[in-house]
Image (tube, rainbow, N blue to C red):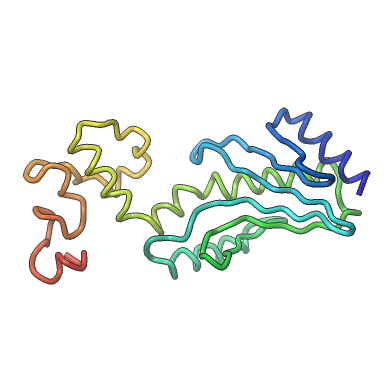
Amino acid sequence: MADAAAIIEQVLTEAELEWESPGTGNYVVKLPGTRKLSTTVSLLAGRHSLSLNAFVIRHPDENEAGVHRWLLERNLKLYGVSYAVDQLGDVYVTARLPLAAITPESIDGLLGQVLEAADGAFNTLLELGFASAIRKEYAWRVSRGESTRNLDAFSHLTRDAGAPGVPGAQGVPGAPGAPGASGAQAADGQG
């Protein structure tokens, strides 16, 4: 484990990443992102293997089956890491590697894969599992004249939100003034 720890620390230091070691063989690394502000990665070097865990998103608000299907299909394209869901339904990126396989290149590659899986897929996962929340947040901000800049990536979901009529309600399914908002359909958001 001492060799593995030295290699991990070398890679993290050379990459100029923010990291700490709360215990022997235990590392918490902050990977900077472009879509997601940052991804925190836990690396734990045990007696025989290195385990890696990184939180991606909380339990989806909607379309859980669609999110899970996307994660499983995406697992086929990832190298060395995979998506996993915990008992609460939160989504993580995980990996396990034998200590004998730890090299600077393998650690660097794993961290790159984590960044792609967590940061690169972040907007897609939000669209799949939180579309209604994105629309509501956008409408709320528009109705109060607040910035929507960090929601620009989701403009295809919010295109009609805040249009003339009922301020901030047009893109929110079931909201007064939203397309198809009438009767029972409006109550369940199926308008």
